[in-house]
Image 1 (tube, rainbow, N blue to C red):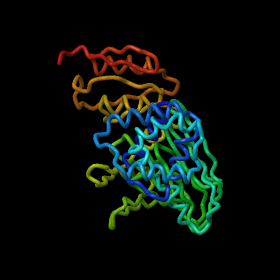
Image 2 (image 1 turned 135 degrees about the vertical axis):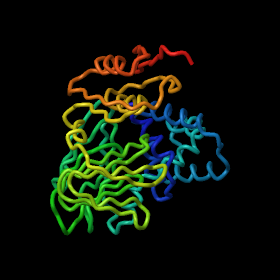
Image 3 (image 1 turned 90 degrees about the vertical axis):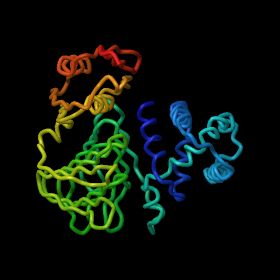
Length: 329
């Protein structure tokens, strides 16, 4: 759970604040559930933040606390030092456009559902319209309890496969931080993890439109096509996908195609709910191909990687795996 909360907080902290969602985010932060993990994640991010809070930061946070109904509750004040020390971070954690989108809706009674799929787990979610979503490890999916209006809009951080119920009068939209996918009735896969440098949309059947946010950057995919959107350059590229590879995670399998050691370790962290500690100076940018069947444990995976990649050893700690290279710096 700790890794999962850290992922959420880090994701929101690099986004652009939306004033309309500040209340909701701080209510979540102040909720006593998993309070210690939230504190640890906020403090960790705060220590990495160069800029300090100013007067407007404190004022904004005080207003938020008031609107959130915090008042002078003793249990909250007991934690005030830690929250204020992380105030700048907290004020950044507001840009999931979920609440913002629905607060603009004419129906103020819309109830949002948040489904969290922790590291090391998979989930199957049936949406209100009967569409089926399979979510990969470390994924957050937001959707309304009941679909209203002209669209069926859900919000994704992570990876999911969508089997959408056909409804031409109410298009189905999947939004991530940088890319939106529009479908009428189809099956497709979207990978939009915050830490990854790319968003990948793959059409399995039917037809989808992928909107990259800028005018003129809207693309229609046909079955088997894949769009890979580079977050740094904001440019997409297209290829024919190996659909068996794309959907391998749904069968519990691990497939790496042209992946660096760092990219593979990032995926293994999500799959096995573990943190790797390593120095990338010991590894180059060589790319590797691996396939591991469902049910493979982490030791089996690392032992095979060690044979192919070579020159590294590993050691397990508590919720941690230490990668040590045999090479000298």
